[in-house]
Length: 344
Image 1 (tube, rainbow, N blue to C red):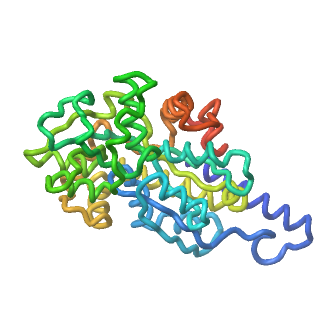
Image 2: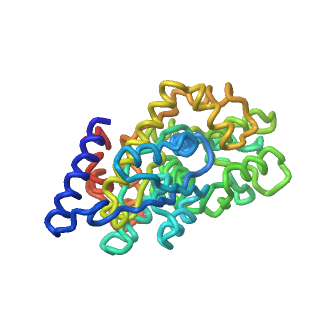
Image 3: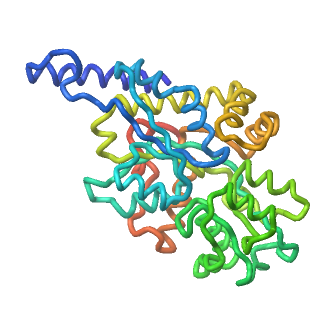
């Protein structure tokens, strides 16, 4: 937190120097930062820090502490890498929470385009993704057939889609990484949960995150085929990012966001019960706070601004050709504010 406070103070000093040099030392900065920010979050426990930030108005608090006054924060709920990236490119988002693969797809696509380039702000969360099914004949990835349908938030580039590809590559080899892609269908996690538990649609499987993955297993007709942690380890699955133009134009707002994210993570760590209550109230989930708290305390679930294992995704996606521009290090993907963290 000290680093972020230092950064904010440095930003204030730099702004004053610019104003002095231009002879424009009047009320406000020489180049005012934005007073309105549009942010997206998704569904599930992976987005808990963002849910806490919104509920507790932590960005508004940190922005005011940074001297930005009263700022307006607009929140959108979006699911799937393609949907989130389209909203970012169209200018409807300033900051977004997204699965690491979705970010890498956009980062690679717009690299070198000054108007569209994006940078990671920080890591967000890690948890287990469960591949659940209501088909009793499916015990492993080898048992899926063309008749089976696997629900994912987005085809090919969503977090779940790429995690599935990585698991398939480990099972069948890199040349066959897309073997199960024809069986996938795009559905937001809540809809996929309903489809799987009802058993009344063609969707008989779902690769999802808590709470939906946990809730699905409460149905006697549903069983787990795979846990992503067994395949990838406990690495960052989601991160937050923004356009470089926004970051460059709003250094104090960017630092305020990072401070707010750290504050949200601390609340979750220190008061998991309170964080669980916030989630239930905000997500309108059909769960008790006690059930959500159990998910938050699951050993596979972590909330941290440190990007952990991001290069594991980048190396895979570069190797199979999903991205053309592959970063050399994880720092290539993120702003300097977080370069000193023990990322990977």
